[in-house]
Image (cartoon, rainbow, N blue to C red; front, side, top):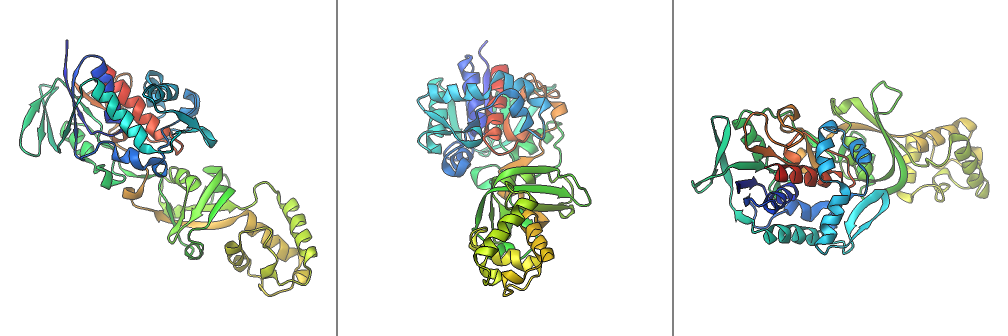
Amino acid sequence: MKKKVAVIGGGAAGLMAAFAAAKNGNDVTVFEKNTRPARKVMITGKGRCNVTNNCDKDAFLLNTPHGARFMHSAFSAFSSKDTMDFFEGLGVPLKTERGNRVFPVSDKAVDIVDALVSAVNKYDVKLVNSVVTQLFAENGHIRSVTLENGQTHYFDSVIIATGGMSYPVTGSTGDGYKFAQSLGHTVTSLRASLVPIMTKENFCSKLCGLSLKNVKLSLYLEGKKKPVYSELGEMTFTDFGITGPLVLSASAYIDKEPELYVIKIDLKPALDNDTLDKRILRDFAAGANKDFINSLDELLPKRLISVVINNTGIDPRKKVNSLTREERAKLVKEIKELTLSVLRLRPVEEAVVTSGGVKLKEIDPATMQSKIVEGLYFAGEVIDVDCFTGGFNLQAAFSTGFLAGISV
């Protein structure tokens, strides 16, 4: 029987849910508060749109720190390969880059958005530019959607795909959490994930804009010898601290008070301490009468040299031929363990995703349907699932959206 289905939110999850539900023969309406749908998709991957990660289920789940077990069914229903086939079938050629990140060949996020919109248009999905103010359930079943103009529309099923609280300018302002709570659902504590990190050290502002490639970032909980996160990659200094792929991923592991964490950056991860010391000795020998401050140009980015030397406490004007073994050891340690103290995370509004959301125990992972209200479904960032950077969060949105759509 043809059902009337409402999708609240016209982002990645919402449009995929609408496509899947409409393709199965249902009468689908998407309510989107913005004049253009999928605004957050437009800014992902710096406007290039990292649409998914070219990986299998095991790799996807390893990159889902919160909600991996819950995501088994959704990813099985619509995998990374399915996402790639979906967009290429809509005429958007894709390419796989470093880290298995997948982008449109055009490097234009708008091509992904246009493809999603054309997919739902093909199945006569109605896109309504309006703000939903209330959902109503009766006798344990979803009944209606009320809009800001006071109109009430009746539906057999409703899919909440409103996103989280990150990037509110794109429309993610936490509406879905309020709807879920009004219908009896629990919303877990919300915090920023995949977000820049503010640090206590003031030298970061001096290095603002400096990007480091092929460095190793390790995040430690105070007093612990084993890092909670450690990875090779890229990062960038800012006026408040640090950002970049490594930093965003590390932020997902900060689940206690931020000030309890310390970050150590290995500027030369390919060299162990002894090899690095020998390298330094060779550089010093090539310019034995140089001042210390002028001796590291071949080893470190120019802007970073004064910071590293200052942290060692060694006189920058000391001649390198008079540096002691102990002083070289201090330099090696500083290069291998440039240390930053976490002050706090940037606000959730600046996060790539929101960590937390509608409690997973209250949602059927096989269908995305609420266990509390029949006919109510959830998809995307509104649920308590979040992933690392690399296309995994968009994949989670597509997977949960598709599963919700076919389940109605």
